[in-house]
Amino acid sequence: MIRTSGAETGGTLLVWDLELAPGGRVPSSHSHPEQEERFSVVSGQMRFRVGRRRLTAGPGETVTVPPGTVHHFANPGSVPAQVHVETRPALEMDAMLVVGTAMAREQYAEGRKLPRLLELALFLRDYEREVASPYVPAVVRAVTRPIAWLTRWRALDAHYQQLRDRDSATAL
Image (cartoon, rainbow, N blue to C red; front, side, top):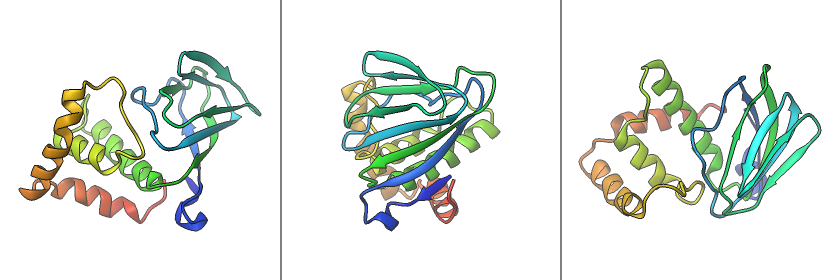
């Protein structure tokens, strides 16, 4: 749930709450090229990999991820983890969280293991300042922009745009 949007802070800060089910995790290791993330565990446990460090944090503990640092997180516990997250600067992270959540919900509901390729290309292009996948080969990153452009040019992005439009009015 978004507590304070980037628009409310002039783009300097996004404050949001994350609830992660037992065994839940972020889909893959990633980095935020220009943003720092600060995770403060409110309840439950979180396991983090920040760069090469591995650590577990519990209530009252905070983990800071500097810009450009590859990281991953998961809930290793048996109860949901509640985490307060601050992202600086906000950029378009609030929109990215909303669209990413909508895509994940749909993927889960349809029983698909992977997101739709064209929608993933659009997502990665739209939010390249907010998120990067460090283990995706350079050739894949190089074709993301042309695929996104071609998808939009051929008007094959209608479903993705519906996700963006439908969920842009809601806050996680």
